Length: 257
Length: 257
DNA sequence: CGCGCCGTTGAGCCCGTTCAAAAAGTGTGG
DNA sequence: CCACACTTTTTGAACGGGCTCAACGGCGCG
Image (cartoon, rainbow over all chains, first blue to last red; front, side):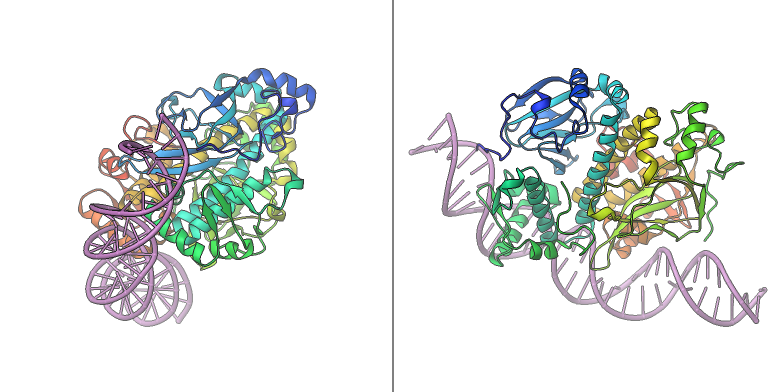
């Protein structure tokens, strides 16, 4: 299945100064001059087909990445063969940075969900890059803080929310994250493209695919969501938010980029 | 309940240059000179009683923290009143950094588990501090990457591990994290002090206190753990690691600081 | 057309929950 | 040192949300 994502490939892929996702990405705070300098810490822009493994648990640490277009995900496989998706990656997301414990081996894996393109940053140059471009480092700190908050929300889901709450929460999150990457004048959109199977939803929510199917059917019958054929529509986000168990007034209804 | 923790308060609390947890903490990479400069971004050293709320969901963002002595935890309370513990905090841990979404309000809460002391960093000065002391920023980036990996492991627990696996995993993690904070010549220790009730274990593992009690009893009968009266002993860490579902050879048996 | 992946449906079971109550610690004040 | 209150842990019995196993239908693709 081929997904044409809202965020099209740029006219000149690999050229940071015209990069359409810079607003969301690591390089956001850099001036044009600084950008030119920082680019040498980046190896070539790379394209990967859907299904490609970007890295696997146990492999040595080589690159950190910025996802440029398409979808990907970070996951862990447990001894019994089950899988837990740890994070869905959307354009602009920075990932693959990991401390050099465990003999410098990857602790988890990452895989392309659609055809993607990404920027690669060799580990060897990272510290130097941050030292040379402090704003990059500061930007990364705040991006990490954002991602941490998002992961905490997932922890609360897996620990304390019911199946339907988890699913509602995940779909709503993905909806908002996708919207945040659309050009402002395209909003609001009625439905988004969602290249995510029920099996993947299950692996992200700590459920079985079978139970996701049943739950999703129930939610569909109540008019809460339409999630089929790679598209997602949430007729009433307010209501969906209540099902997802959002506390009113704090997170608001637009949790994360 | 009063817990005397292994890491005693230092002779001169608040003096960074003699700080016994610097090895693990944010200030680790700084030279003595840099340390003196960086200290002005820190407000006074603060002590709190067990049970104190360090911050609550919805409050404005004021400080980030380094926990100096004692135990604390970060948690979220869901609409139905249940609680999910997101992170246990041990001496040296940096926490409370959060992006300024949600109208600059805290998205989750933090609470002291024992009597604690901590260093407070006003939000207003953080960016300036990182800009002035690049090494601090870089250190924080790597600490965040470590914490992210640890949180991912928790996600995998809540999503895909059974009750006994989750509990084994959590206890083993806490065991190693405590050990990493003991002076090297005190190791190996037979048992550690663990100021954590079954209710807290339940809230961290996404279980009920009742089921934690039963599971822990079973594990005790098999000789896997002794977890009572605020002390934890793990007779056979190798075996415990297998129960926890560690993949051999990657994480090894010593996952995290 | 046939194969593989994805989603649906059904039946039965089990892990962990819920509700309830008692027992065992732990800290406080007389 | 004991009495009392409170928190933590234990134990029992019944329930149920989500899982397992299994089969079938639909759709895209070679």
